[in-house]
Image (cartoon, rainbow, N blue to C red; front, side, top):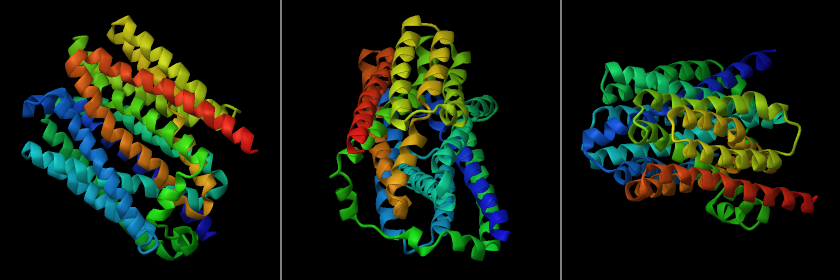
Length: 394
């Protein structure tokens, strides 16, 4: 009775955390033009902010590998929440550019840690419904992404960009207080579900071993190129609309449209399509590539906004399906299964923002955004290869 009552309450906290995380993750894409103006930097230099955050993801791999099995996942998640909020607060002080790069690196460390552990905990607590719960979990992340640009743009119109970061950091501190009180109150019941077996340690040799199987490599490549598409749009689509199309009023809506599509894709479309996860990803990303190119060709703010929405609707299901697949392949080590596909997110997120920023500086912002369409096409290609590989294994 108690287990049935309080375990869903803890899962609800994890779901809300992903909503809040999705909201906070839009700060860089929403405020990037103001940050560029404040520091007097180029697009390529601004791309380093996202890259340093993603570089922190690599350190998170070490943090998780070292501490998982030694510290309870719920405690490690709480610690990550605290340091994530502290990193956001540091950015709100508008430090020198070198220091703000370090602050973004810290955000990367603790964001990846809390994201990885949230996925793992949800998989541990309800192993029979991993795919459904992953879609719902990341659908709420998408809802946060939908709300983030609109709310932050409104706040930035009344406050400075630094004050927006301060408000976001305060929201995480409030959530941490609620989380800590609940976990302490229900500690004995929750730990019966998060058993020692589900916190099995793994080492760096296991990480290397992961890449010896073809299906692992293909799954990893699907995640890598999908993130190339998503982060390109998340960082640059608002600036493309504001600067290239000279339609500042549409900027935040173009970014939010993508996240609206992602949320709908994960919450409603993916669970109701009766097909292999890999086929969903393949055809979804093919559609994404086509509509994004069409949006760029339209050369209009409504056109690219509609394209952003369609990109989210068609390919937004990708991340939860990949994570769900990896967790199902490693049910005894869900943290390991989650972490390995997150290494693809980390590397892709380091490479694409400065690369696309450099392309934008050299060739123009439309070519920068077009990289997202190319990434979607390659994602579809690798997903199709994975589908064929899985059929051959069966």
